[in-house]
Length: 237
Ligand code: SAH
Image (cartoon, rainbow, N blue to C red; front, side, top):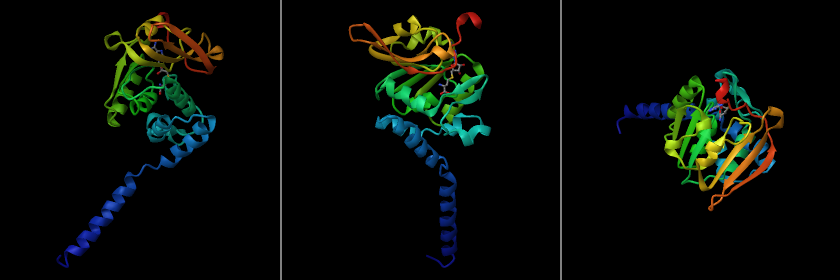
């Protein structure tokens, strides 16, 4: 090594450590705390769900001026009258969905793309439908930038589902229809499961789990009251 090489190496080391420092995600600690205080403390134990919540950068799914609130215990506006759900609700729905690595999942209501990104780390593929063009476009760009290659975003009406890709092992709705649309139950595979907020008005909604048995029978149970934006019905568009 020449004497002149030493300062060069020192400079290179210094630059590398600066780079590592600047690449570190300053939100990691906030996410760990969110998982501990909002999710584990309320009884969610599924290690895969906790890992997905810990590793998905929620602050990149909320408007820039709300980043400081991204990991707080409530929903946030994402523009165009829509909201990203409270972290606990995303974790609860993901837990109830009980999706596995080989599952193909349909989501209705892409919104920011956050729920789709959480699921992307747990399943084979997420097909997600959004009815508002600006939201579909920005979620598609955001998910691509984050390298979520197993998510496909479609602009369209969730009431119709995605017949070309059906049946789905799991279906999740993040906007509330007055009742579970039959079209979506039809697109659920046998042995599959659907999780949805259901109700005519925000004050009477409940989170519902629908299971289609191997024999094709439908079982339905209500889990807890929730408050979601309504799933826009065809007639008002
Ligand atoms: N899952 C989202 C939050 C969704 S908010 C996230 O993680 O950010 C509910 C979304 O459902 C809104 O973006 C709304 O535009 C969309 N939506 C409402 N009615 C719909 C319909 N009929 N088909 C598809 N999307 C719909």
